[in-house]
Image (tube, rainbow, N blue to C red):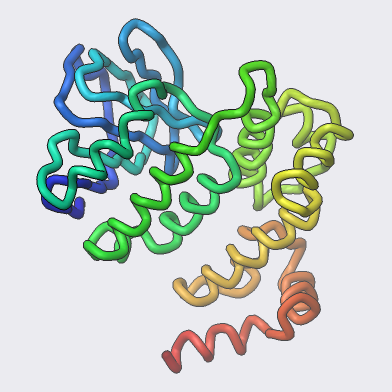
Length: 258
């Protein structure tokens, strides 16, 4: 599926298998993870697109990639040939020429979370896809952190680990170890970038996942509770009532009524 904007953007959700031979194209391409991972080499520099990292393939860059596991990626093609009213877009994108691999920072993570929850609508709505794409470009064109500041990459790894393990018990020690940092620094990064704590962030994501599953699936409330990381239906009901003054049954009823 893809949404195309004349002389500007093309947004698509794609899966890959096997290895693609070395090639290049005359537009910028931004590849972001939805699920799985992909090894990729751009102009001789190797790296990986996974839950913590994306890549910019600038126009004319020679690249090849390998993906052997089940995967899904959001791919944004950005034209470099803009005319008339679109000229400012081409000028705006000049800084992309210096980009390659980038951390999935909290602002980009929020955009990916939105895309995951609204994938079909986003891809098939020209207006929504263009708005989302411009927000992504705005995030990518922000100044990078200093080369010796690994905080954004560490936080991206932590957020990716949390996203992948929502259904299982997690400790701050687990998250910090998998992000390659200390528990103290992890707490500091959450305060600095998210104005939150790891556990508060996890609790919010679990509730969001549970509510999405209640609205969009016919799974039993017990199954949904387990998938969202709750011990049982009672624990989910208690958390939902305390945080949002809702019950699983009321969420489902509202979804049916709309």
